[in-house]
Length: 402
Image 1 (spheres, rainbow, N blue to C red):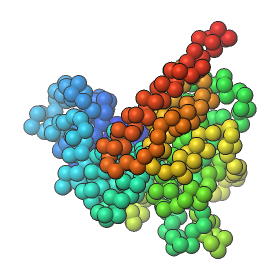
Image 2: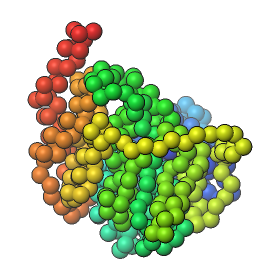
Image 3: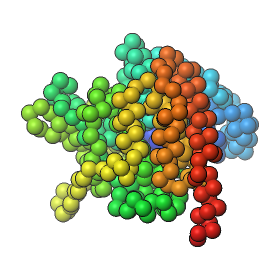
């Protein structure tokens, strides 16, 4: 099987390459698509020798050329080097490729993933924005082309496995687990004093900055609810979030006879990545095994939707439909950025998103360019909300108080 990895230098991309490294007789890298981390991409090129390598822009392309020249790799063994949106699409749709791992963070990964679906590739989906921002368009394309989409996020991958236990019609609800993040036991009033460093200290996973903050606010779980609705054709009311700090159970599926099927595994992304690559078969994966002889305690509780208001807003946006979830995602990214920059306090992330949703009209995008346009409009609205709000002067006031 030949693969293109969209986002090869990120955590999912690196883990995917590790799975390939340990199954080199089964998988071959055809395209590596990265952003600006040209040093890591150069190392990947030297090891996996893909025919195609893509970076974000011309400046990164110049830098990649420099790294490859310094590496000593003869030019006749260099891959075809490209940059930009069209290059990403080309790498994802080239006829030689069978599988595309969609792991680019943000809306920049939507166009290439959608093009790969139209080209009837199998997709391993680790990019939340693909379904959160353009779920209806993506699912319509999957139905029209017959392309296969296997979720890679641990929760949706777990749900995909649970759905194999019975007929879709017999399912009554899907339960997605959440670690609860670093503030699950923090009083609401104390959240106003949370620092970015504290919010970035996730108790279970090591992830990028935005997704770590989204996990702390439970917005990440809200995005997963939206994704699950599209992936498994469920109403928001049929998807329930359960706080499970141990993160051993990733998803549970309840059937109409009262049976609950759970997917349980170590917290290692290589397992769902390999599942997506080998489905419907299973192969031994290079991940830790749970030791069932050791005593363990698993806790479950309902999330506090007033304390973690973004999860509630995600449910409401999916119920509302149209471009509401696209706006939700765009506003959250701007608000998280403002929090990390010290311009707004932690609870204001939800307030910025809520205000942006109230200002931005909902419409039905008909094309991927429509989605990108709505995303940009929503970001501009969110930036104005941050600038106009009383939290714009938060940094100075907080510093004076300290």
